[in-house]
Length: 181
Image (tube, rainbow, N blue to C red; front, top):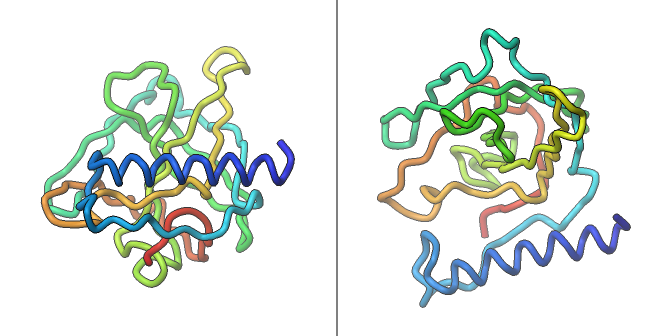
């Protein structure tokens, strides 16, 4: 995808999300909603990497995530990804809903050096598509930080949101995706 086509695709995704929220299908008051804020699209923050799956005996291992309300949320840990970030290679844990043997998308909650400053303090989320064309259990994951978003609890009370595990706290800033106003 060319840089301009990539940017257009990211901007279209963001426009559709704003329309969704403005229509009252989100965590905000549509009457007061003026659109979300984002870092400028930057393809340097998009990676297609190999999912390093858990050993077969551990596949789908339950992992308990803390939430903003003190409850817990149990998910299946499906593996991890290695990302070549500007401050060095980093590993993030990858999750899926319990019981999904071959998910099409995975969940990657993370915090970074922008958390609490330019982005929501508890962290952000990525929903990353899997490409299983490798055959077997192998899969590629499209980790695009330009699509990183704040959990609903960032917009108000009444939402229970999983918190990124300590293993997914990045020391450097991720200047891509959704940000605070």
